[in-house]
Every structure is written in structure tokens, then in C-alpha cells.
Image 1 (cartoon, rainbow, N blue to C red):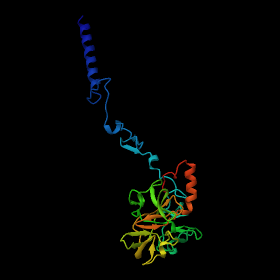
Image 2: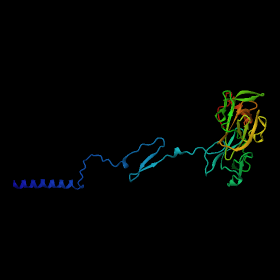
Image 3: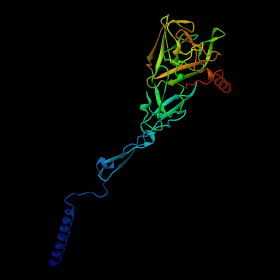
Image 4: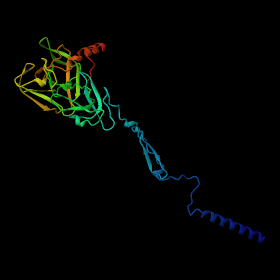
Length: 302
């Protein structure tokens, strides 16, 4: 019996030693079974995705967040060309070339004041105004731009039944005074036209004896068949006497013109009757308004 008790005691002691030894083999860290270990936020956080940019986030092996941006939101837009203003490659600019009364052609090119600045062999000619300005764009030698289509400054006041209005604020369908059989008649506008003034554009500044000022491009027509480049001090412009004429640099980015729905196409600008560059487009615009089922063309600006 004594030997049996002694044997059991030794067995229990050995078991206790074995348990103690197993408890210290992990360096003293007692980790309960089933607990979840939460790591550093840099490696386990999931950032919210920005729906506006569709950014996605991935985590590299070191736990550093790596952001990959969806480039769909950085579309450069349509390409420049023909009737579309858009983007150009190779540092070129999308510039306007007036082609007629209501048409503008957009070209990827560079501005110029002389042929010497047109260094690209595919565009060796400085296509520019011949009256009152140095504005131009580099084109081929045979390309034609109708620079005379440039017209009035945006602050030109146009007579309407509700009073004078700035030409840049007018829209197709607005009513203005025009000349019909030598009488002033209120008629709707068929069109409002706006053209990029370009680089170095100049206008003829006409000061009337009343003190009012009219600024128009040199090629803009008067109501009696002349152009503004023909005007001189002492002349009469649309029934108003002229006290001063000068050519000055243009101060605005764009020029403007309107087309009243009358046979003359004339309108009253800052107290003087003037012509319009859009007269040749009258038949086309009237036809389009008939097709649209309206008295005037849809409100639009070229």
C-alpha cells in the first residue's frame, strides 16, 4: 500500500510539471481560445468609396493604402474640328474661322500676326483680317476665312420696344426695331450671331454728334451699302451725323450681330441704323423656322 501511494504521488507531480512547462513555451502570453485579434487600422480598415470619382483602395503588404483613381471622370471632351469646339493635341488651340453669315469652322492651330509665326509646314499662311486688325490664325495658303463676319461689341445698345438692350443679351425671337419701307417696325429676331474676336482684332469706333458711340468691325455693313472702314468724320451713319472716326484695339473676347426678320435686316445700334452680316442667311433661317412650326428660328446662338 505504501508503494502504491508513493507511485500515484509521483505520477501527479509529473503531470503538474508537464502542464507548467507547456504554459510557458509561448513566451508567457496566455491567449484564450476563440478570441479575435484586431490589427492596426492601416492594414484592416476598408475606406468608403467616393461615388463621384469611383476611387478604389487596395492595401499592399506593408499595410500602406494605395489609391487607384478611375480616369473616366477626366474625359478631355470632344475633339476640335469643323463645327465642333473642342480639344487639340500638341499644344495647339481650337480657334474659329468664320465661313459665312452663320457658320464658323474650328481649327486646331495657332494665332499669328504674320506668316513668319506660322512655322508648321502644314499651316504656313497667317490667315488674317485685311482691314483694321492684325488678328489671324495659321492655315493653308488656300483656306478662306470671312473675317468681315465679326461685328459689334457686346455692350452695343439695340433699340427695342421695351427700350435699349445690350446686343449680347438678345436671343432669337426677341423683338427689335428694324427698317421696313423706310419706317421703323418692331420685328422678331431670326438669329443672334457671336464670333470669337481672336488675337489683335481692331474695330472702327464711330462717335456720333449726339455723343453716342458705335463700335463695329471694319467689314461690318452700314444700312446704305458701305462698310464701317469707309466711314469718315462728317459722314452720316444711318441718319446720325458722325463727329469722329478712329480704329482702336478691340477690348472683348467676342463680337456680336443680329438678324431682324425684315427685308432690310437693318437695326438701330446705339442711335444709328446699321446693316447686318447675316442678311444672306435670311432665307435659310426663315425656312428652318417654318419647318420647326414657329414664327422664328429656335432660340440659339452661333
